[in-house]
Structure formats: structure tokens, C-alpha cells
Length: 253
Ligand code: ADP
Ligand code: MG
Image (cartoon, rainbow, N blue to C red; front, side, top):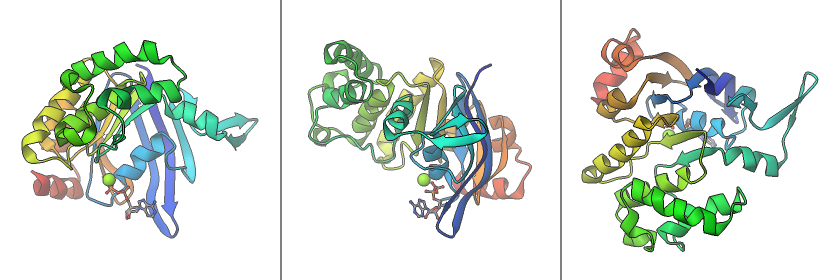
């Protein structure tokens, strides 16, 4: 199986604070990896490192074999130009906790925007695809509505359609349901589950353990900037070997 996301020895600090302390992570194509861990353990930083929203201090990130953020010349690495980084980033779909939709654009325009601006595709080609994506996540009837007229769950589903519009090689979700009222969580998790069943490659940060059990091929538990434990949900969630994993899971269950 192709390794779609490959992190090797990733370190990241913010000033004196070392947040990622040597992370290795492999995500195979068509699989779902769920990342669990306490607040402040480095989950968002890890996700952001995958598409170079955070520049790592040490270590390498590859997506589908391609080095992210750098080009190798001999045995030296040279940082890519902004334009090249933006191109690489457009191969990754990112769904944030707070939806981050453009408020002045309709749902449809939100979905159409990135393929047109970042991938230089023609608006008239992207539009039918965008409508189909909105349909797929269950908000097809909201195409011409502005974000403020949508519930949180609908906004997040538009954000998922927007991420998919890039035809990404991998989808990253950073606590996609944490900002939602409880009664809206299910509809968003269902949309994500459906994408997983269709074979999308995903990395999902979530505290929803039941959802993790259902969707994950691999569960990764991170604490203090290191991967403490990883494996199939049956092992990590139901029979964790590390005390820290056990303590965390008993708290969030
Ligand atoms: P998590 O997503 O697991 O809650 P984060 O990756 O967001 O954790 O953050 C890990 C640590 O790094 C936290 O202590 C956070 O305050 C710190 N941090 C994250 N981003 C920055 C930043 N841009 N500047 C300084 N500190 C940061
Ligand atoms: Mg976070």
C-alpha cells in the first residue's frame, strides 16, 4: 500500500517550548488515522506540520512521496518558494474546528474559490463539481446561502465540501465537531464517515472515542509531543498498554 503521509523525526518548537519531540507517522493511502491526546499535547501542530502551515525545525514530511516545503539538492535541503508551497498545500484538504468559511461568499462560492485561485481551474468547470460536493455532504439546497444563515453543522459540512473541491490526496480534520452544539455533532461525523467509506485518506484529530472506534484504521495517542502508542482501535482504545493512554481514555469516555 502506498504511504500517503510520511513524517520522520519531526521536531517543532515555539521559542523555548518544544511541542513536537521527534514524531514518526505513516498514513497509508485510503486509510484513516485518528489522533487522540490531551489539550496542548501538539495535535494541531502535528496536523499543521503536514501541510507546512507550521515549518518543522527538524525532520521530514512527505506526501505521496513528495517532500513538503523543501527541495533536495545533493544532500542539502532548500526551502521552496511561497508559490510552490501553496501548490503543495492545495493537495491537502484541511477542515478546522471553527469552519473558517469566508463570510462574504455563499456556500457555493466558498467551495469554488480555492480550486479557481490555487489550482487555476476554470470557474465554469468547478461549479458543477462544487454543487455535487455540497449535495454529497447533505447541504445541496444551501448553495446560494451565506455562512451566517447556516447552522454550525451545515457550515462545517460546507467546509468539508470546500476541502474536497481541491481533490486532495489527504484530508486533515482538526477537532471538526468541537465547536458544535451536541445535537449537530452527528451530522458532521456522518459526513466524515461517508468520505472514509469512499476510500479517502484522512488524519482526524477528535475527542469522540466512539467515532474514533468506528472510523479509524489506526489510532495514535500523543502526549507531550511524542507518540506514546499507536495501532488499531481495538488495541489502543480497548487494551492500551501505556498508563498515560489508559488515563486519557478513561477521562474522555
Ligand atoms: P493541541 O492541538 O494538542 O491542543 P497544539 O498543537 O495546539 O496542541 O499546541 C501545543 C502547544 O504549543 C501548546 O502549549 C500551545 O500553547 C503551543 N503553541 C501552539 N501554537 C503556537 C504558536 N504559534 N506560538 C506559540 N505557542 C504555540
Ligand atoms: Mg488543537
